[in-house]
Image (cartoon, rainbow, N blue to C red; front, side):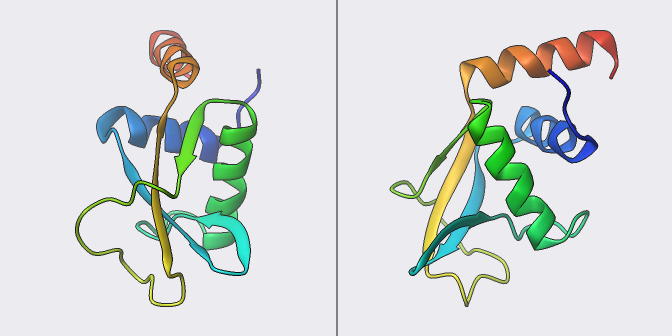
Length: 99
């Protein structure tokens, strides 16, 4: 499995913080991560979608995190995402191999 640098970065973030906030619009199921500006919101959206498709993260809009969501006024649907067991295994391989 070949991961983009953005996907690796996101897996590493999830290795440090188990749950991260995700947002979306009412009329659009596209997930966004707005907490960092290392990538654009569109790039983060693609990263989340790719990681979810590969079953490395799970996105859950039924479980929002407590607290405020940064820059999320236009995104009323709030949720979270986390590593799956498979994602944890891939992250461990990345860390061992030093990718």
